[in-house]
Structures are given as structure tokens and as C-alpha cells.
Image (cartoon, rainbow over all chains, first blue to last red):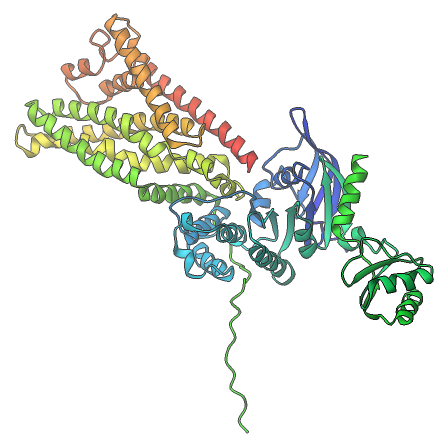
Length: 311
Length: 289
């Protein structure tokens, strides 16, 4: 049986803009339902998406999306994918329905299909009656939803989202991430989420591609990259912090100085051996309310990866 | 015990679509239709087209009446020369100035070029929208004025003559508007601001016209090749069914209606150059998307 093609396949990809090296020999293959493209501004994320959509010709190397060559089959790729751009994108004097209908027709939907589908998608994205209003009157959050709707109108197999939470307030950000999670996990659309915001990627994606200054820093399942690499136990407790710290020290353990509130991270040799921690808590009468291996946050990992790449 | 009543539950969240795509040939007409609808919604364009067209027709009819046009060919000449000049000078930038610059300003090209369209589809759609809006502005005054004397019983106009006029206008209107729209699109693709595109158009249209007039004053034989109007008049004099007096009014008298092919080639070259510039500029915006 033949192996299913990877969603994204990139080999030795190089893109130079004059003397600027946007991408330097990137090679990767990703096939998860939700892929995070992570990196600071200027790391080459947008260039990579443009190459995958066939909008930019690479200096050398090969890129394919959905098993289609990004240069020879660009139109086919764009018909099977959706792209939500980072910046404002609108046509003045158009309503959201007209804008999304036009987007559908440009992909190849008939006018009737595109119109019906525009209503459905905008309604599903909570634009309700506002979808008839002139797009010029929309708030940032509504414009983000319209951008998502125009990318979704033809039910693409793969959706490229470039900084989808840009300019949104915390509530809007959570709603947008919820929508993306729903689309990728329940509606059968694969998502490539490009962002420099770690939380966004962490909350949606299960595979990660980390870029820095045009080079691939890390790629793989999110769990593997974050890992449970750190040998430490995280506890949440009720009781006196100083007394508990003393008890832990008497057990030969050194709780982290950065621990705060009711949370404490205790480095150990073996995360499965929780007995010394529990003993120390029992000794000082502290109530342990949560105990689990401590995970590094994506922030920690990202900082470490970038630091390593710069060295 | 009664069974609990069941009511259908409709999932109003996002649902998949499984329709089929239509032919690629529909992309350019879709872009043209959307651009036309959108331009007409603009107050500036609507004002320019509706009131401009009305004023144009009224002005030309008045011109015909006041100039005591004794026959329909003089009326046709007046109508054609005036409507081409005014349409190109005023209406082309009103319609064409915003054509591409607005998409660049609001990043609409990000939407266009992430879909399955070629640059040629986009250019054809935008150009067709401008042509469809401008054609009545150049065609109607000419047709009305060509038939006006007949309606007012100044002189009888034969059906053969009207057929020739109409056929000639079908040739001359594209010859006038296609280069004008191409140049305007090229200027519009170079800026994010419609007013800058308008100023650019006036510079491109008016400066060669002034230079051409000056050179004609010095009786230089090639003077009319310099300006858009000069070249167009050379073609019009060849195509339109005018008497010798009419032809001499359209081109410099000593040149009569010579070299219409050279004028046509110059306009074709300007069109090709402008479209190449648009293609290149759109390529840049496409890559920026």
C-alpha cells in the first residue's frame, strides 16, 4: 500500500531576495492535522507559505503541498487550499457576503454555490446579520472572521493561517483560536498556523516547525519538542511555603527559587519517585493538591531553540 | 407512557462543501462584474459617469445646434472629437484611477492571488470593467449627434450611412479606449492612491498633447504621432465616413489622413507596453501577498 502524501514536503529550499536570505536550505515534511509554523518576525514563515502557494519562485529546492508541486501546479494548490492573510484585506463598498462570494467564485465555485456558501460560512463564523453590512464598518475582530470566511468558502483541504489573532483582544483571540481548533479537529480541514505567538500555536497545533532567520531550528510533534525533558515534579499545595521548602531540603531536594504562589517545581532524579516529596509534605502538614511531572512550556523550549540556533 | 417528542437538531456550525468547480474561463468575467458593481457604488465614479455622460451628451448636442451643423458628418465629427477628448481626459482617470490602486491600498490582492487565478485573468477582468463603463460615454454622444440632424430634419440620413457610422465607431471606440484604459491601469498599478493615478494620467495625456500642438505649430510632419489624440484622430479620419473637410480637421491638413497604420501601431505599442507594466507590477503585489 502506498504511503499517503505528506501535507507539506520541502527539500533544500532556498529563497534569496537579493542579498537577503529569506530561507536557507530548509528541508521538512509535515502531515499532522494542525501544523504550527513558529518563529520570530522575519524568520521566513510568510515566504515559506508564499512558496507553498506558488506565489513566489524559490531560488532553489523543491516544495509541495497536498502532494502537488508548488511551481508546476500552483493553481491546483490554490484551488485546494485557503489562505488567511496577516494584514487587513478587504474591498471597500462590499458587504461581507459579496466579498466571500467573490472569493468563492475566484476559486471556481458557481455564483449560486458561492453565494449560498458565503451565507453559511459567515453565519457559522458568528457574523449573523452583520454579514450584509458594508465591510468598511467592521471591527478588527469581524474583519478577521471575514478573512477566515473567504479562505474557508470552498472547503479547502488545507488552510494557511498567517497570524490569525493579530490585533484581537484576549476574548477575540480565544474565540478565533476556538474556531480554528474546531475547524481542524472536527471539520476535516488541515491547518498550517503561522504565528510568532507561542500560546496560539500551543493551543491549536500538534506538530511544530520552528524557523529562525530562514533556517529550520526544529520540526516534529509538539509533544516531542516540548517533551517531558525536564526531570522535575510540579506540585500545588496548601500550607506554609517556607516550612515545606525546609522539609523538602531535609529530604535532599532543592525546590526552584522561581516557584511562586501555591505552585512549586522540585527537580528530582526520577519523576516516577514521588515518595520524598509526599514525605516532606506529610512531615510539615502541607496538603498536596496536585502532583505531576513538570512540563517545559513552549516559551522555554522556543527560547532554548532560538538561543541554540544563534550560537 | 408517551415516547419523548423528537425535534430535529440543526448543526449551525461550519459544514463541509462538496460541490464541483466551474470552468476557469469564468474567472475574468467574475472579476469584471465585481469591479463594475463596486465602481458604480463609488460616489465619485457614479457622479463622473452619470452626470459626466449627461453633460457630455447635452454639450455635444448644443455644440451641433449652435454650430449650425448643416449635415450629419459635421455633427459626427464634432461629437466624436469632443467625446473622445473629454472621455479620455476626465472619465478615464475617474474610472481607471482606482482600478488597481484600491486593491493595493486595501490589500485586496491578497485575496485575489491566493485564489486560482492568473494575472491575466485579473488584468482582463479589471480592464473589461473599465471598458464596459466607458464605452457608452464615448459611443452615445457620437451616435446621438450622428443621428441628431436627421431627427431634427436638418438633412435626411440614409440607413447605409448610419450603418457605416456605426461600423466605424465599433472600430474607433476600442482604438480609443483600449490604449487609454491600459495606460490608466498601468499608472494605477504603480500607486496606492487614486488621486496620484489621476494626476499621472493627466500628465501622460495632456503633456504629449501640448507638445504635439506646439510641434504642429512648427509644421513638423510627425507632430501628430506624439500625442494620443493625434494618433487617434489619424485613425478616425481614415475610418469615419467623413468628407474631405472633416478629415482635414482631424489630422494636420498637410498630412491629411496619411499613416493611419503607423498611428495604429504606435497606439498598439503603447497598449502593449502599459499591459507589460501592469503585469510586472501585479507580479510584485502577488509576491507580496
